[in-house]
Image (tube, rainbow, N blue to C red):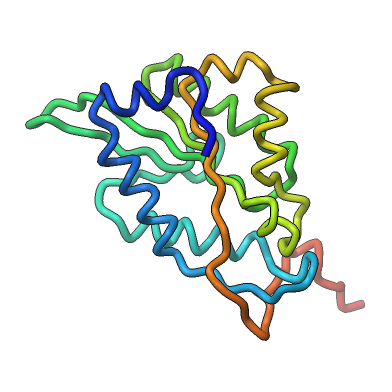
Length: 183
């Protein structure tokens, strides 16, 4: 994990510690077994597993596209006192990390969230995934060297790891573009 922009302090001060631990628990309990071969496993399937785990939890609100992936609100009685936003960047191209940072920045500026977390595969895990996904080192380097102003946002970059090995890879997704036409 890497904390930026006072995110650690803000998470503690605003009472988001419980949500932050809940986020970690969701990620830890999402079981991902991979075939240990370079780019053999579908990053899209990993994303689906994580999204499914969030969807099975209470009060995590998911977004389909163009917004923060998952948000949970901390309530005191009927008043929302703070919100944690989570971007899952385990599938898709590594340049989409910039879009995730923009989503978090906009959510912070529009007071939709109070702190944001970007979840990426660890450097080791990314080696086994398809789709040129961003790994932890890339995400840190991007924030610290390419998009330096992101260091002032209350953002946490969190790496996830696979749980074990499998003889079968996570199946790659078949898209309409990947299908051969029948002519």
